Image (cartoon, rainbow, N blue to C red; front, side):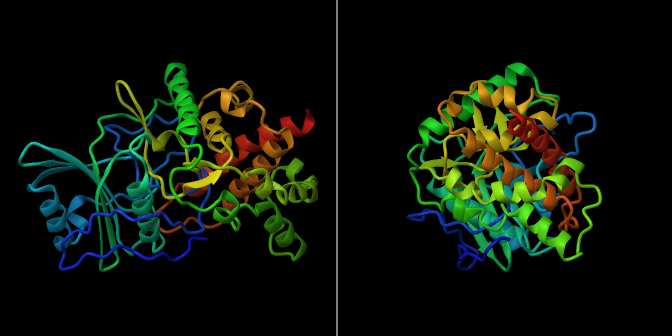
Length: 366
């Protein structure tokens, strides 16, 4: 699902600070299904009872090859005296806050070729995006990126914030919903070069078609799939065919918004982990996030979407087509084996899929 990309190189273990002219992206996992490296949170989100956690297999700072540790310290101009691993997020790698002997702090995330060989390319993509994002984007500033011997290391400014509480607190949710609006306004038109959503998720948003084909060929008897979805599989596949046109737009979307990719500071909402960014409609991020909000104890998706300013004037059929594709992605991927180092990802996708399907059924009944 994820393409191969050119990586940044480290010459003699010395950093090349990333500053490319444009941000190219691979095809990959879409909203709510990617394995991000984890936010710079001081504490993990409080998962709603019954909601699967967003966790991957974390590695300590000491797991990074010594030459790359030295390159990070050289770039920061000081020695690391303390590292604190941060929970939350799916990436099977390092996500740690660093304290340096000169009193400054930074955040580092890193992955190697094991246990998940796709993770380095995801980090390379994030390096390109993070380096290209404008100052106005509510995202941490990338300080440097290193790529050597299969390891990719990203160094960010430290953000003192926490992930939203779960079950969702209404005040915090309102802050995040306002930030979703601000993102759409600030990032329209897109200030950087990224693929359109139709290209970005062309393979990922074909879940209903794959389920129908697998059922027809006897590869999947669809055990465990919602009975309503099984009954309407052909119709859902037809709706899914319309999503790419429905998602066309000029807004730069994060394309993987959910609680573990958001940090709340005392006065800001900071959005982290941008490897899947694409151009699309202003309401794409909102729609893609809402199944996870419902899954984690928040209000119903339809309540939030229908009253949100970025959804004003949205074509109802376009919204339904994208929601169909998103739901199909969640439910079809949830039936696959867990990727290496990501033991909870499939359960997380399944829970989002069930929330998305409830929303979809309510739209198709309307």
